[in-house]
Length: 168
Image: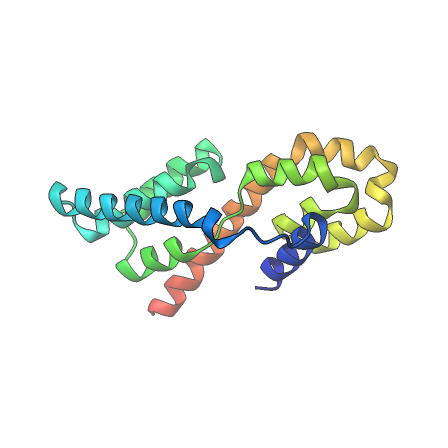
């Protein structure tokens, strides 16, 4: 929760809080709603169980957020999980590597990219050293996506362990 709050504060501070007109956002909201309705109809017509739907939706949603090797391991583990674990896992917000690279390029010297992926200590260090005098910032532009996927794999493992402990 702290990581998410810090990330939102950093992003809003950088980009400003320029709210779009409600009329501009309305078509986007309608399209998202229609997409959800269509997916629900396809789900009902396909004969898929709710459990299969949870597994498929998790894999489809988070495919780019993990390394390929991790996705293979996750795919194997999902079929062994209980429904409660699947629901908890689907509710977990994994960081997007594309956003982390964009943040790294734009405001990486201020450590915003590290704050976004949850490395608060490194974000503060990067902020105080002005991106390691620019050197750290350049290195992070190449490594931040891998680090984001590594952190997502750690978050996945923590979520699975927490849900298993809660189930017992």
